[in-house]
Structures are given as structure tokens and as C-alpha cells.
Image (cartoon, rainbow, N blue to C red; front, top):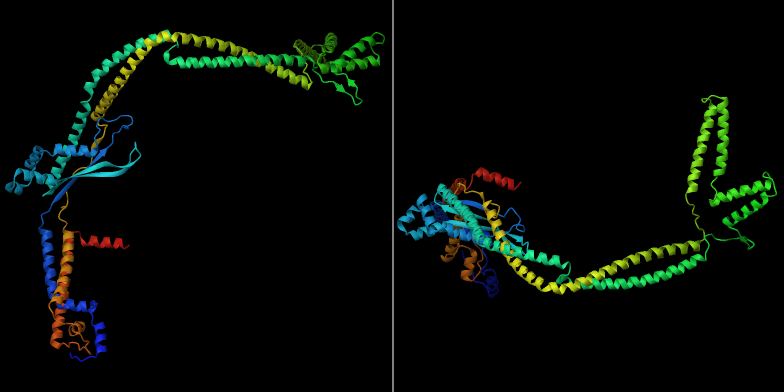
Length: 596
């Protein structure tokens, strides 16, 4: 590769083209080819170290139990538990009680734990390691506080786990710890609830006897007072003042109604029940009663000088009968009696000439019976009083006002009598109150103090009794084992697939990175850009390297060897994944399901 002398313009343009630039993909590929041995060796060493770490790290098996914190079955608003501490505090308290030195060391001897550690370490170190291997994790959820309606954290469960060197030992130790936690929780709650009852019981009984004596004395005082108690003074005065105001209002209303009644009676006396009729010429026409009276007078005078079959008399009688029916004065009993006598005579004549079964006789009997019923009904109607309804609107209006005023007046007079009686009773109560007040107030104060103290003690005692019963019957808040410790099928630590994957990535990036660093620090020139940068000139032409046939054959053999090595590495990685992580067929079907 030669070089030429360049002008200043060419040198200026060469600075622009030969400045340090980022490597292209082709240059990186060439770099990887040059440093492939270093990259492969470094990657193989790192991959081997990660594989050794993954398979030589001792396995740790974790057995986990899930304990649910169940609320009490009876609502807390009805029955409140005597255990007032938070769940987190109780779990920590039980943890300190269960994980005591004696309990832990008993379990170490029972299950022969930490053999190698016990040979070279003290008891304290062994117990500290045992405590670290016990994991307790609390599960909290966001809830709304029922009292304050604010969001808060509530503990609903916790997990108890143990990390052991063997799967069976880990399950046994976790099971033992779970049993200790459950039993210690029950003992603690029962003991705490039962210790509260005995002290309060005797004091509650003494106060009950004292309150009973005070109640008997108060009952006698109230019976003697009869509504004249001191706390009813304001009420009695208010009721008496109210009755007095109502009595004054009633007297005023009664006077007003009496005056109105007198006025309405006078107005009603000046009116007639019936409205007068005026003709078209302006003359006053007689009403029904007046025409009936006039016709009766005319009939009496006309009968004196004419025969009964005279047409005028017959016409007058017909008009008179019509008016009587209209006014309700006559009910037609005379005509019915005459017809009944005639039909009876006809029936007697027919019976004398014919048999009783003859149709004419039967018809006559039916007619007589019908007339008898009509005559009896007319007689009954005549016995009832006849009320002639008034027609004058003014008369009807005044009459209705008078009736309403009379009824209101009677109601007010009865209310006035009752108000006077109430005023007398309230006044008597107010006079009796000062004689009863001193004794009554002393009894009330003593009873209120005793009742308040008794209520406090009794409430606490009953809550303690109910809480103890809740704990005895297992109705209160309790720990419930929902997932017992199971035999771990695979170790929880270490995560061998993750270590292998991270080791492969570290080997890949470490080998490539080491190759790039080595290529930068060796000082050799491999590309035209490196030569331009070193000479500060731009070469005119670049002649590529022309390998010989021998070199080409060696290059082909190397490519085949690299391909076989890569294939072998892929097979080894696949085998490791198949054995250490999961079967490859499962991985394949999982990938197919993910991509649909």
C-alpha cells in the first residue's frame, strides 16, 4: 500500500474524512474474526464458571404455610372482642414467644439441624442461623375503615416459611412452627379474655343491690307525688299557662258565637221557607200551601149549594187531590179503603155463586190481598212525620249557618269545662312540688352516680364474658391454616436457570468486550481509516489482501470447525436447559401458544 504527497486542500478534506468515526458493521465483523480466539476462550471460561456456580451451589428447600386471619363470625358492632391489639403486634408477640431459645434448640435437636455448623460454631450462632431461615411475611390489603371512612392497611394473612437443606426436613420444621403459632394464638387470646371477668363481678353485684334499694325509695316518692315532681315544674307551668290562654280564647269565641246565634235566629224568623212567585204582570201568585188552603175553603162553600156530581165540584176535588199529593198532606187512604170494601163485597158474591178454585175467585182474592198491602203501607207512611223541605235559598242559607253556629257553641262550652279542670289539676301539682323536692333530688343524685358506675363496670364485665365465650367457642378472630406446609418438589435457591442465563450473557458480552479492548490497545493498523488517522493523510487506493490457495483451504477448515463448535455449544445449552430448567417440548409448546 503506497502513499502520495497531498496538497493543503487535500489535507483539509482528508481531516474531514479521516476523523475518528464510529466503526461500521463490517469493521466489527472483522474485529470479531481477528479476536475470535480470545473471545471464545474468555466466553468459555466465564460460561464454565457460571455453570460451576449454578451446579455446585448447595440447594435450599423452602416449605411455606399460609395462615389466614379470619374475622370473628359475630359482627363487631354486636360483640366486641377483648383483644384490642393490632394483628401485626400479635403476630410479632407470638413470634417472640414461639421462637424462644428453648423452643428453637429443642427443634434443632429433634430434627438434627445444621450438623456441620454445630460442629464448628457456638449455640448462639446456630440459633441465629435458625432464626434467619424462618421467614414470616405479612399480607396487607387496602380497605376502608368502617369508623373513620378513611383508606387504611388491613392484615388478612401471613406466610410462615422455613429454608432447609433437605425437602423433608424443611416440611417437618415448617409444620412444627405452624402448629406452635396456631396453639400459642389460641392460648393467648383465651387467657387474656378470661382474666378480665372475676374482678368486676363482685363490684357489679354490690352496686346492683344498692341501686335496687334506691329504686324502691324513688318509686314510693313518685307514687306519693302524683305528677308533682321537681323536673315537671316547668312542664306543669307551661301546661297551665297554655290552658289559661286556651280558656280565654274559648270565652271570647263563645261570646262571639252566642251573639251570632241570636242574630241568625232573628234573621231566620223574618224569612219564609218557600219563595213567593211573581207573575208576568207583576202580581204575586200564591204558593202551594196558600192555594191548598184557598181550594179547601172554596170546596167547603161550594158543597153547601151544589150536588156532589156537579162538574165544578168534581174539578175542584181533583185539583185539591193533586195539591194534597204535591204537599204530602193526603196519602190516598180513603180511596184505598173504598176500593178494598168494594173488592171484598165482590169476592163474597163470587164465593156464594162459585167454587173457591174458580179463576175469578182466585183473581179476586189476589186483588183484595194487594189492596190490603197498599193500605197498610199508606198507613205506615201517614204515621211517619212529614217534613216539608224549604225552597227559599235565603232561608236555607240562614238555617245552615244557625246549625253550624249551634254545634260550634256546644263544642266550645264542653272544651271550656275541660280546660277549667286541667287548670285546677296543674295548680295543685305546683303547690305540692316544694314539699317533695329535697328528698327526691337526693335520691336522684345517689341513683345516677350508682347507675353510672354500675353501667361502666357491668358493660366491661359483660364484654369480657362475651369475649371469653367467643374465644372458647372459636367464634372470635382466629388464625386459620389454609395452605399447610407442603413437601417442596424443587429447591427455592439457587435459581440455576437464571444463573446459567446470566452466565451465558456475561460470557458473551465479556468475551466480545475483551476482544474490543484488546484490539484497541495492541497498536496495530488493520483498516484504511486507522492508517489515515495515523499518517494524517488520505491514501489514494487500498489494495485488499489476496490469500493463497493454502490459506483459503485453512480458512474453510476453520469455518467448519467453528460451525461444529457452535452446534455443539447449542446442543450443550439445550441439554442444560432441558435438565436444569424445564423440558424442551414444554418450552416449544409454550412458545407456540404465546404466538397463537
